[in-house]
Length: 310
Ligand SMILES: *Cc1c(COP(=O)(O)O)cnc(C)c1O
Image (tube, rainbow, N blue to C red):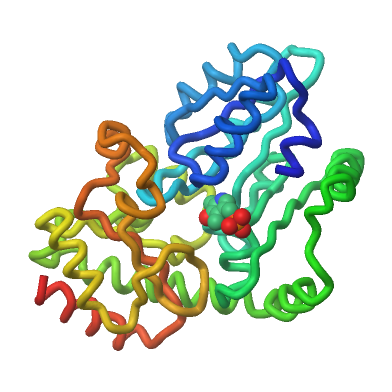
């Protein structure tokens, strides 16, 4: 919010990829739009549509990309969007912001791909223990950062000293935690992909779409700790699975050292219409898992026993 309000003014437009984090969508549709800022949604992973939108938007102030997108792990090409934005012949180039919560700071580096700002929910992997709420904005341009800092002072949305102390004590282990979480996720996604109770698994190393594979290989160094599993048998089966797992807790949020699993269609994405959910691949049987740092053998045994009982 601080980053957006530092650069947008009434009459501007903002392009954003969808699906996007629910709170971000509410901020754009429910808050910025009534203030006279036009929101232009573009489906994630569609570089052609994103290029067209960047070239045709009027008074474009911001391009906001969340990649990978939640919960179906669709990836958007950061470098290409930055090149298209840089090539505009308008007086003021739009600011490209990347929500890097899912794969940063370990596995995806938007600033080196040309983005202006890399934005984090520090509540997730940076904090790592699901016990603080915070946000981080990184950028290279000191003038832009100063604009954001002054809006932060104006709004007062700044971390308290004790929360800074907690966050600071977590940063030295973020790479260790994320690597372990990614290894756990990869082992289990690949072990369960042929399970008879599993219809489909959404995970970067299991991508079949050529363009998605290419973006993953160019843009990310590891696949990360988030996996979505489409369980056969729809909502009843997904709910059984969530009741039967013993190590993973049935809760939203992500990025902590404990494994969490949730049913996006009835929780994180419950405000969407059935049509939008179906089109985005967020089915009745879909379960999103945020892997923690537990022993991979325990997790695999737990998921296998939970699937057997569903
Ligand atoms: C959680 C989340 C946010 C919002 O973060 P808060 O710290 O809860 O305000 C934004 N973007 C993504 C991708 C998230 O997962």
